[in-house]
Every structure is written in C-alpha cells, then in structure tokens.
Image (cartoon, rainbow, N blue to C red; front, side, top):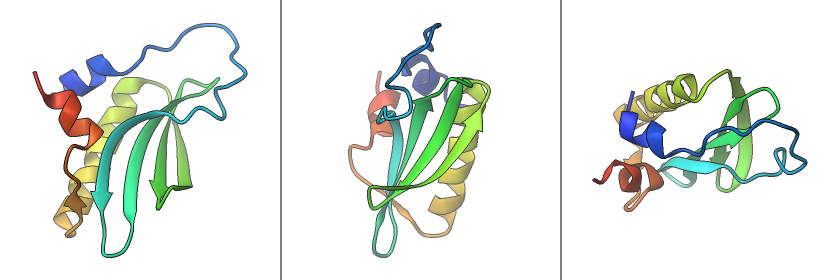
Length: 101
C-alpha cells in the first residue's frame, strides 16, 4: 500500500452530506487502454468510501470499501494487473503526483 498516496486523501468527515453521491471523488490513477482512458477515484459515501472506476468518463463500477486503506490497496492491485495487461499509465496522473515528495 502506498502510504504517501493514502496520507494525501481527504479524511472522512462525520455527519450527513447531501453532495456525497454526486461528488467527483479524488483521483488515484489514470490509465490508457487501446481506445479509452480508465480512471480510479476514491469517493466518500455514507457507508465509508467507494472505489469508482470510470471508462471514458462514464462510471462503470462503484465498489464500497470500509476504509481508505482497503480502497487504496484494492486500487493498487487493479492498477498493477492492468499495467501487466499492457495498459499505459498516463503522464502526470494524480497517483504519480501524490507520490512526489
């Protein structure tokens, strides 16, 4: 798990929030496939957090996670698997920016 990436994510605030469902989320990484871009986002929900995947700016998956640690670890595994399949990391992706000192 990337501790630097995790420490830069916004912390969950207690109390109801009407904009959680429509919140764009915090970008984790962006990859380019053969034709489309795939983005991973951390989204705050009333449950805790969700990992959102967007393909060509259309949300295709929203996976609930109980903690940011779990979410980031899951996103890292997906990213590694896609890179191994030939997807390309886009320059200046949010995850790379978060890893800079």
